[in-house]
Amino acid sequence: MAQQLLDRYIAGSSVIHALDARVKLVLTIALIVCASLLPVGAWLALTAFTALVWAAIIASGVGLPTILRRSLLALPFLLVVVTVIFSVPGRPIFRLPLGFVTLTATDAGLLRFITIVWKSWISMQAALLLTATTHFLDVLRALQALHMPKIIVALMSFMYRYLFILVEEAQRLLRARDCRSAALQGSGGGSLLWRAQVTGRLVGTLFLRSFERSERIYVAMLSRGYTGELRSLRAQTLDRRDLRVGLVVGAILLIITAQAFVG
Image (cartoon, rainbow, N blue to C red; front, side, top):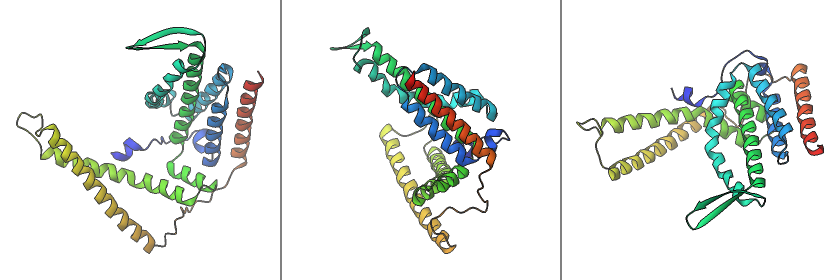
């Protein structure tokens, strides 16, 4: 159950699924970097990036509504950017009275806000497409092939493997708490202070169990020859088709970005 909630991979046999994980990872990072470098108000380039990402999503077969629905989870974090509407100098467009302070929104601030939100939205969709069409272990192998530090790859691998176990352990603790705090009315017993104390004990218990489990797992892995490197029996070979796709899409990204600055 926990794996279904946390794993974002959607199995498929599309062209995007078959593309090498290293190529997809490099192209995703390149698109995010190119989008972040675009100047304010580069609507044509942003539209081109959006069309490129949507075309890849449609070709992958994971469903455009699925990616759009998942991308909505990042919208609350974009509320922090709302402050640029009132902090960037420009021509006033409306005023927002807040008690003793009146905030003035400017056209330049609104323009920058829309640009930042659009960039973040595109980047989020590109990252979600990567996770939806590439298994996380393949992403780790791609990071290792791109010479990311081994310790970071190992930490990410353990996080992915045992996060499901931690979630299931936390769910068992919560079920045990619910079974021991029921009331006859069916609303649950205990005051708010009591519930806070119980929650604190649950967190402490989960931490101790996780620490003890990690010690046992580490000793077991050392006894089996673990050296801190993620190994795989599959040889990673970069096909010419994958290389051509990477070069073509990378060139398109560079052309769109350069055109935004020239125009």
